[in-house]
Length: 260
Image (tube, rainbow, N blue to C red; front, side):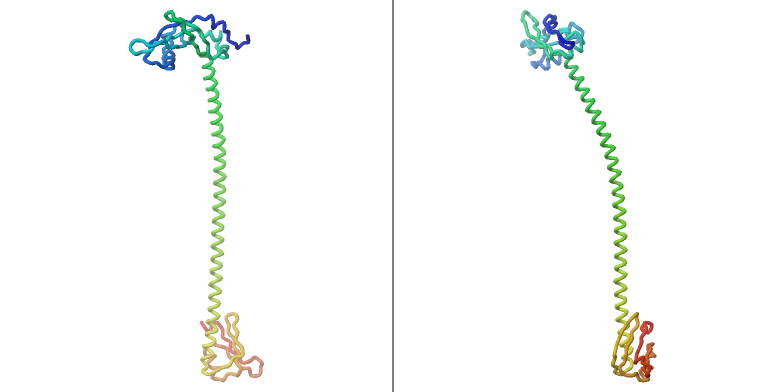
Protein backbone atom coordinates (compact mmCIF):
# COMPACT_ATOMS: atom_id res chain seq x y z
CA UNK A 1 0.00 0.00 0.00
CA UNK A 2 1.41 3.40 -0.95
CA UNK A 3 1.61 6.39 1.36
CA UNK A 4 -1.60 7.93 -0.01
CA UNK A 5 -3.73 4.77 -0.34
CA UNK A 6 -6.69 4.41 2.00
CA UNK A 7 -6.95 1.22 4.04
CA UNK A 8 -10.25 -0.44 3.00
CA UNK A 9 -10.09 -2.82 5.96
CA UNK A 10 -10.47 0.15 8.30
CA UNK A 11 -13.76 1.00 6.58
CA UNK A 12 -15.02 -2.56 6.80
CA UNK A 13 -14.21 -2.75 10.52
CA UNK A 14 -15.48 0.77 11.36
CA UNK A 15 -18.24 1.24 13.91
CA UNK A 16 -21.36 2.76 12.40
CA UNK A 17 -23.93 4.51 14.60
CA UNK A 18 -27.47 4.76 13.19
CA UNK A 19 -30.41 6.79 14.45
CA UNK A 20 -33.82 7.75 13.01
CA UNK A 21 -34.67 11.34 12.05
CA UNK A 22 -38.13 12.60 11.06
CA UNK A 23 -38.12 15.64 8.74
CA UNK A 24 -40.92 17.57 6.99
CA UNK A 25 -39.41 16.81 3.57
CA UNK A 26 -39.08 13.83 1.27
CA UNK A 27 -35.96 15.18 -0.44
CA UNK A 28 -32.80 13.23 0.29
CA UNK A 29 -30.69 16.26 -0.61
CA UNK A 30 -32.60 18.48 1.84
CA UNK A 31 -32.27 15.80 4.53
CA UNK A 32 -28.48 15.65 4.06
CA UNK A 33 -28.25 19.44 4.30
CA UNK A 34 -30.34 19.38 7.51
CA UNK A 35 -28.09 16.73 9.07
CA UNK A 36 -24.97 18.68 8.06
CA UNK A 37 -26.30 21.78 9.81
CA UNK A 38 -27.09 19.85 13.02
CA UNK A 39 -24.12 17.50 12.98
CA UNK A 40 -22.77 18.69 16.33
CA UNK A 41 -26.15 17.82 17.94
CA UNK A 42 -27.00 14.58 16.13
CA UNK A 43 -23.59 12.86 15.98
CA UNK A 44 -22.19 10.89 18.94
CA UNK A 45 -18.74 11.92 17.70
CA UNK A 46 -17.22 15.44 17.48
CA UNK A 47 -18.57 17.10 14.35
CA UNK A 48 -15.10 17.71 12.89
CA UNK A 49 -14.36 13.95 13.15
CA UNK A 50 -17.69 12.72 11.77
CA UNK A 51 -18.62 11.28 8.41
CA UNK A 52 -22.34 10.74 7.87
CA UNK A 53 -24.79 9.18 5.44
CA UNK A 54 -28.57 9.46 5.06
CA UNK A 55 -31.07 6.94 3.63
CA UNK A 56 -34.89 7.31 3.42
CA UNK A 57 -36.90 4.80 5.48
CA UNK A 58 -40.51 5.72 4.80
CA UNK A 59 -43.38 7.93 5.95
CA UNK A 60 -43.72 9.00 9.56
CA UNK A 61 -46.50 10.54 11.62
CA UNK A 62 -47.68 14.06 10.91
CA UNK A 63 -46.90 13.90 7.18
CA UNK A 64 -43.16 13.76 7.82
CA UNK A 65 -40.58 11.40 6.31
CA UNK A 66 -38.33 9.16 8.37
CA UNK A 67 -34.67 8.94 7.46
CA UNK A 68 -31.98 6.63 8.82
CA UNK A 69 -28.87 8.66 9.59
CA UNK A 70 -25.55 6.84 9.99
CA UNK A 71 -22.44 8.27 11.65
CA UNK A 72 -18.86 7.00 11.51
CA UNK A 73 -15.40 8.28 12.21
CA UNK A 74 -13.66 10.01 9.31
CA UNK A 75 -10.77 7.63 9.80
CA UNK A 76 -12.68 5.16 7.62
CA UNK A 77 -11.14 7.06 4.67
CA UNK A 78 -7.60 7.15 6.10
CA UNK A 79 -5.64 7.62 9.29
CA UNK A 80 -4.72 11.21 8.37
CA UNK A 81 -6.39 13.98 6.42
CA UNK A 82 -3.61 13.91 3.79
CA UNK A 83 -4.06 10.19 3.13
CA UNK A 84 -7.86 10.44 3.27
CA UNK A 85 -7.83 13.27 0.70
CA UNK A 86 -6.38 10.77 -1.81
CA UNK A 87 -8.78 8.02 -0.82
CA UNK A 88 -12.10 7.00 -2.40
CA UNK A 89 -14.79 9.62 -2.87
CA UNK A 90 -17.43 7.30 -1.33
CA UNK A 91 -17.45 4.32 0.97
CA UNK A 92 -20.40 1.93 1.40
CA UNK A 93 -20.93 0.53 4.90
CA UNK A 94 -23.87 -1.37 6.42
CA UNK A 95 -25.81 -0.13 9.43
CA UNK A 96 -28.81 -1.39 11.41
CA UNK A 97 -31.93 0.49 12.53
CA UNK A 98 -34.92 -1.18 14.24
CA UNK A 99 -33.74 -4.60 13.14
CA UNK A 100 -33.37 -3.55 9.52
CA UNK A 101 -29.96 -3.37 7.79
CA UNK A 102 -29.31 -0.51 5.40
CA UNK A 103 -26.39 0.14 3.07
CA UNK A 104 -25.12 3.65 3.73
CA UNK A 105 -22.94 5.54 1.28
CA UNK A 106 -20.54 7.80 3.17
CA UNK A 107 -19.07 10.75 1.26
CA UNK A 108 -15.38 11.42 1.84
CA UNK A 109 -15.31 14.90 3.48
CA UNK A 110 -11.55 15.14 3.02
CA UNK A 111 -11.91 14.75 -0.74
CA UNK A 112 -14.61 17.41 -0.75
CA UNK A 113 -12.42 19.78 1.26
CA UNK A 114 -9.47 19.11 -1.03
CA UNK A 115 -11.64 19.79 -4.07
CA UNK A 116 -12.86 23.04 -2.54
CA UNK A 117 -9.26 23.96 -1.74
CA UNK A 118 -8.23 23.18 -5.32
CA UNK A 119 -11.10 25.24 -6.66
CA UNK A 120 -10.19 28.08 -4.30
CA UNK A 121 -6.56 27.96 -5.42
CA UNK A 122 -7.66 27.87 -9.05
CA UNK A 123 -9.97 30.82 -8.44
CA UNK A 124 -7.17 32.72 -6.70
CA UNK A 125 -4.85 32.02 -9.64
CA UNK A 126 -7.52 33.12 -12.11
CA UNK A 127 -8.14 36.29 -10.07
CA UNK A 128 -4.42 37.01 -9.85
CA UNK A 129 -4.05 36.45 -13.59
CA UNK A 130 -7.09 38.64 -14.24
CA UNK A 131 -5.68 41.39 -12.04
CA UNK A 132 -2.32 41.20 -13.80
CA UNK A 133 -4.09 41.26 -17.16
CA UNK A 134 -6.11 44.31 -16.09
CA UNK A 135 -2.93 46.08 -15.01
CA UNK A 136 -1.16 45.20 -18.27
CA UNK A 137 -4.17 46.25 -20.36
CA UNK A 138 -4.49 49.41 -18.27
CA UNK A 139 -0.85 50.31 -18.91
CA UNK A 140 -1.24 49.47 -22.61
CA UNK A 141 -4.42 51.52 -22.75
CA UNK A 142 -2.65 54.44 -21.08
CA UNK A 143 0.22 54.26 -23.58
CA UNK A 144 -2.24 53.91 -26.44
CA UNK A 145 -4.22 56.87 -25.13
CA UNK A 146 -1.06 58.98 -24.93
CA UNK A 147 -0.09 57.93 -28.46
CA UNK A 148 -3.55 58.80 -29.72
CA UNK A 149 -3.36 62.21 -28.00
CA UNK A 150 0.04 62.91 -29.58
CA UNK A 151 -1.21 61.79 -32.99
CA UNK A 152 -4.32 63.95 -32.56
CA UNK A 153 -2.17 66.95 -31.65
CA UNK A 154 0.01 66.39 -34.75
CA UNK A 155 -3.09 66.01 -36.90
CA UNK A 156 -4.60 69.23 -35.56
CA UNK A 157 -1.32 71.09 -36.14
CA UNK A 158 -1.18 69.72 -39.71
CA UNK A 159 -4.80 70.74 -40.30
CA UNK A 160 -4.04 74.24 -39.00
CA UNK A 161 -1.07 74.48 -41.36
CA UNK A 162 -3.17 73.26 -44.28
CA UNK A 163 -5.90 75.79 -43.47
CA UNK A 164 -3.32 78.60 -43.16
CA UNK A 165 -1.61 77.61 -46.42
CA UNK A 166 -4.95 77.29 -48.20
CA UNK A 167 -5.94 80.73 -46.95
CA UNK A 168 -2.65 82.21 -48.12
CA UNK A 169 -3.05 80.62 -51.54
CA UNK A 170 -6.64 81.84 -51.72
CA UNK A 171 -5.59 85.37 -50.74
CA UNK A 172 -2.78 85.33 -53.29
CA UNK A 173 -5.19 84.11 -55.95
CA UNK A 174 -7.69 86.81 -54.99
CA UNK A 175 -4.94 89.45 -55.14
CA UNK A 176 -3.79 88.22 -58.53
CA UNK A 177 -7.34 88.25 -59.89
CA UNK A 178 -7.90 91.76 -58.51
CA UNK A 179 -4.58 92.90 -59.98
CA UNK A 180 -5.38 91.39 -63.40
CA UNK A 181 -8.86 92.88 -63.34
CA UNK A 182 -7.54 96.27 -62.29
CA UNK A 183 -4.78 96.14 -64.89
CA UNK A 184 -7.24 95.21 -67.60
CA UNK A 185 -9.64 97.91 -66.52
CA UNK A 186 -6.79 100.42 -66.27
CA UNK A 187 -5.59 99.48 -69.74
CA UNK A 188 -9.11 99.82 -71.13
CA UNK A 189 -9.59 103.12 -69.33
CA UNK A 190 -6.36 104.50 -70.78
CA UNK A 191 -7.32 103.44 -74.31
CA UNK A 192 -10.78 104.98 -73.90
CA UNK A 193 -9.16 108.09 -72.50
CA UNK A 194 -6.77 108.22 -75.47
CA UNK A 195 -9.59 107.98 -78.01
CA UNK A 196 -11.60 110.61 -76.14
CA UNK A 197 -8.56 112.89 -76.14
CA UNK A 198 -7.88 112.36 -79.83
CA UNK A 199 -11.53 112.89 -80.67
CA UNK A 200 -11.40 116.22 -78.83
CA UNK A 201 -9.39 117.69 -81.70
CA UNK A 202 -12.66 118.03 -83.57
CA UNK A 203 -11.33 116.66 -86.85
CA UNK A 204 -10.82 113.23 -88.32
CA UNK A 205 -7.39 111.71 -87.75
CA UNK A 206 -5.84 108.62 -89.30
CA UNK A 207 -3.67 106.52 -86.97
CA UNK A 208 -0.70 104.57 -88.18
CA UNK A 209 -0.30 102.71 -84.87
CA UNK A 210 -1.68 102.52 -81.34
CA UNK A 211 0.12 100.84 -78.44
CA UNK A 212 -0.06 100.72 -74.63
CA UNK A 213 2.70 99.83 -72.20
CA UNK A 214 3.28 100.49 -68.51
CA UNK A 215 0.03 102.43 -68.35
CA UNK A 216 1.09 104.72 -71.17
CA UNK A 217 -0.75 104.99 -74.50
CA UNK A 218 1.08 106.03 -77.69
CA UNK A 219 -0.51 106.85 -81.04
CA UNK A 220 1.00 107.70 -84.43
CA UNK A 221 -0.73 110.03 -86.93
CA UNK A 222 -0.46 109.59 -90.70
CA UNK A 223 -0.46 113.38 -91.16
CA UNK A 224 1.18 116.15 -89.13
CA UNK A 225 -1.12 117.73 -86.56
CA UNK A 226 -2.29 121.27 -87.00
CA UNK A 227 -1.39 123.90 -84.41
CA UNK A 228 -4.99 123.80 -83.21
CA UNK A 229 -4.83 120.04 -82.72
CA UNK A 230 -1.51 120.36 -80.89
CA UNK A 231 -2.99 122.97 -78.57
CA UNK A 232 -6.05 120.85 -77.79
CA UNK A 233 -3.98 117.73 -77.09
CA UNK A 234 -1.50 119.64 -74.93
CA UNK A 235 -4.43 121.12 -73.01
CA UNK A 236 -5.66 117.58 -72.33
CA UNK A 237 -2.33 116.71 -70.75
CA UNK A 238 -0.98 114.75 -73.71
CA UNK A 239 2.50 115.10 -75.19
CA UNK A 240 2.02 115.72 -78.90
CA UNK A 241 4.66 116.48 -81.55
CA UNK A 242 5.06 116.42 -85.32
CA UNK A 243 7.89 114.86 -87.25
CA UNK A 244 9.38 118.17 -88.35
CA UNK A 245 12.04 116.22 -90.24
CA UNK A 246 13.64 114.71 -87.12
CA UNK A 247 12.26 111.20 -87.79
CA UNK A 248 10.30 111.08 -84.52
CA UNK A 249 7.03 110.84 -86.37
CA UNK A 250 3.74 112.50 -85.70
CA UNK A 251 3.06 111.07 -82.22
CA UNK A 252 0.84 111.58 -79.24
CA UNK A 253 1.90 110.17 -75.87
CA UNK A 254 -0.69 109.98 -73.12
CA UNK A 255 0.72 109.34 -69.62
CA UNK A 256 -1.41 107.68 -66.85
CA UNK A 257 -1.57 110.96 -64.94
CA UNK A 258 -3.47 112.54 -67.80
CA UNK A 259 -6.42 110.20 -67.23
CA UNK A 260 -6.67 110.28 -63.41
